[in-house]
Amino acid sequence: MSIRIGWSVHRPRVPRPGEVGHHVGLFEYTRIEGERGRKVVVGWLRLEPEDLLRLRAKGVRLHLRVIGVLSVAPDVEPDLFLGVVKRLNIAGSLRAPSLAGRIP
Image (cartoon, rainbow, N blue to C red; front, side):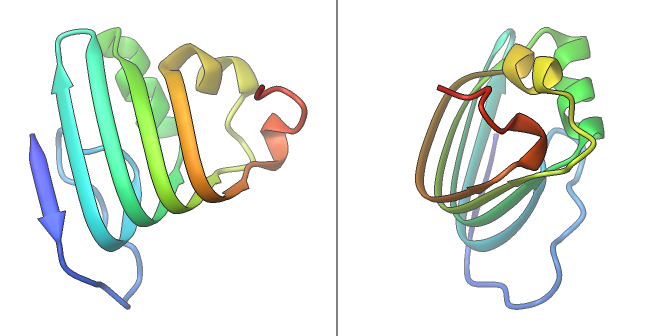
């Protein structure tokens, strides 16, 4: 589990082992237990294919809550995203051109 609090105005930090995505913002909470995962972000989160492939290889289904901006890399396949992200709550904006029309 990791909890990070504090505002960052610099470029996104490269995630450490066990973390998910590249994060810039005020608050981040990540918890992965077995096949369940939860991530809460206030700020900006960018998901790359490597992040999602690592979680899928572990069999993790993620509950993702973002207050701010969720940016999904254009090379993330919709089936990969939907296979890892079980629940998605966004209060802000979603930037995911490859997922257009695929997220209910």
